[in-house]
Length: 293
Image (cartoon, rainbow, N blue to C red):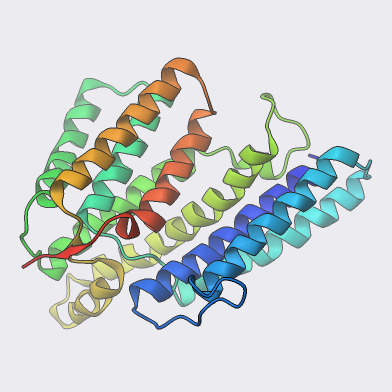
């Protein structure tokens, strides 16, 4: 792995952390400071845009010159990237999970479709596995089309399914990309960038899955059930976009994944990871959101 690949991974991680921060502030209705260069956007959005610009300039320069670096130097660069990333994952995935984006049934349906199509492409699923998966998938899809407000206990089960889907996606992801100097398949800087961004997002939720599972099992005791009631408003939203727009997005996601599978425009995992990040960070701001009444 050369300098450009390491810079791309670091850029992906940093930008995803900034996106998590921006999404968290926006969903909590925190009034953002206006941008300095572009007052029409928030200052954090401005920082994200500038970080993307500067990162890709540095990546392009590193690709152009491709300086030869020793294994010791490259290992030091990887350590400087990974140790802060793992510290972030532990702090915000297990200790203080304040940066987890709020999702709703529609977001979960789209992510379920992405993960399922990715699984079908990577693994041969038996008929009984597909039958078992069909039950929660149909239930979530029907809930996404209704205006029914679920109780916290039911929301927690849907959110648990969402975390399981992200764990399945993390399991498919090639995290060897982060540590191996060579890969069986040629990888571009964009692939490394997506691997960094998606990797920090998927691992953050996979770590939180452990804490959330403990919260679910604590529900066995009536005295602990208030924990879910307190947690779910921070993790699960009752707001949804209009149904026809949700169905259009779902259809587009399926078509894009199918077309990519047929024609091979991008690596399947890179595209699936990119679509997951889009669904979580941008679905709720692409269209006017309507509350469930």
